[in-house]
Length: 188
Length: 122
Image 1 (cartoon, rainbow over the protein chains, first blue to last red):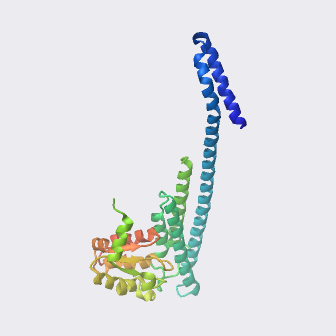
Image 2: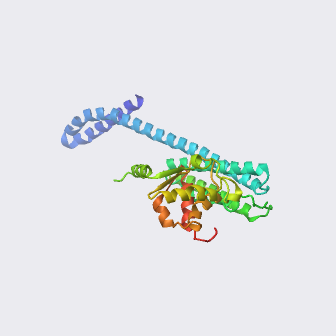
């Protein structure tokens, strides 16, 4: 109400000023006509300003909340990628006949499926968040070749497969982080 | 304007469908028969090829519902159709409909089918 009153006063003052200026040459006719309009327009403009401000603040809050939710989602995805990578590193260091190796195989496939589901949810929300190619490369780096094979050999710590898994995991994480940065650095 | 969902529904209605979790195994694993009873080779030879040979139109493969797939299973089952069983990628693109919530699995399978060379190991 205070804002509306002060805006009304300002509008009236402007009108009086115009009236004073016009009095000199046209006898104040134009100003006398405008005064009632300006008195009505002042509170209306104040109301518009308040509503516009509320919309702007509300949109900014929503954007901030969306950003936080997406950040949490991406952190969970990153954690899941880490779990799959750790499980894969353990899996390839165990013999295929080892019981733990079999349970790790199930865990890897299940977690990869969860990861696919979470990334699919992201893509459904935001079309530019498409990480299919990176996910395929990550899945293939672990489960292609002799994965789940009874003839699989136990890998040494320096085997190339661990580097490939690590690179594919990093590439997937970087892709998600890049997409997040692009979305929130462009001001959209 | 064509509605892709309606098109898919019509295609699925007219074709036969394989639901891997129901018709084969909830735990697909391994490449070769020697790797276990739910291998990609067994799925290809005992389920996929007979279905493809028995239907003249399209065949829908429903991939959801299992505990997940390894690339070795997918490559042997689907890439193996071209490498080992004489199907062509062009023919399979016309006749095979893959369905999964995770589109990366579908894309991976199509990649194996497209890249496979008859008689050449992956």
